[in-house]
Length: 149
Image: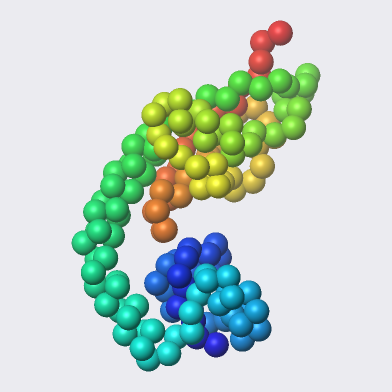
């Protein structure tokens, strides 16, 4: 079933995208919650008109997001955590810690936009991905240091 998304839905699409989903998912979940609408001819025309009107706004947002991604890629975040004798962490470094450290540096980053390729459970240099806007992702260096006792 073809639908038009009214909101961004992770791993499915972004607002205004026309996507194909199973009919039950659309009828029972997405449409009743206002997250999508059926992609009939009038809704498609309306969606196209909305996208045309938002093109300039989206261009500015993309430009700002790319500038933010470039700045974030140059950043290095230092996390100090408690470690065991072998350099393993007690727990792991979380996305909330990274987001808070970036906020201290003046970047407005939501923790849900921060991700890791694999969990950070060791001291050393790692990378974190920060999604600035849709497909614009910045890679931030994360240096994990053991806490001096």
